[in-house]
Image (cartoon, rainbow, N blue to C red):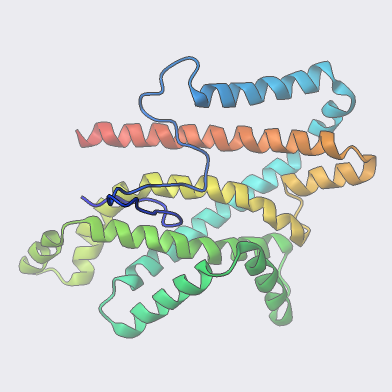
Length: 271
């Protein structure tokens, strides 16, 4: 079965070995059971440092932490809504990329190529102001739309690779049994594809969580913007961004552990 991973950076060395590099936090490996594994040192170290600053140096760190919770909720809200919408767009794009209908294939491919060639920050600005000329939408929905358009292209490549990793003999067997290609795709290929692509989708969720900080430019009161607001009022820039960085680190490492547990559970089911 072909390997499926994040399509962002998958170079090969001169010997042809596949080298996977993710935009998200490192996913803990199955063998990392040591009490002093890299993940445990990073995660619990960040929590310990955050606790030290909040409880032993309350001025200004405790005030900063009390200023951030609503921003954390907005960050999670934007992330969850964006990944949910991106999954739909990505699935449609992935199917379009393997479609035998030329126009559908071209539309999906052009979409992927254009979106992957433009930085996310530029896309956020463009979509926000382009939408403003047509219809006024709340800032948070403009942010979700921009994140969806961007990550839909990347998830589309993940779904395409996942579908193509399923042996083509299964599609041929389904057609021989009287199913149409659409029925075979829906009933046989896609259920297997979902199991294959879940780990890389988890990686993209973590990457999207980090990239959600870019929506602060749209006046969305996410974690980063709340940190900037506090810093602009008190001029404690170093302290504010230290806390923001530690909170982001804890969140990404926490979700990376969830992705690792999901991968372990899937591998046990396959045995």
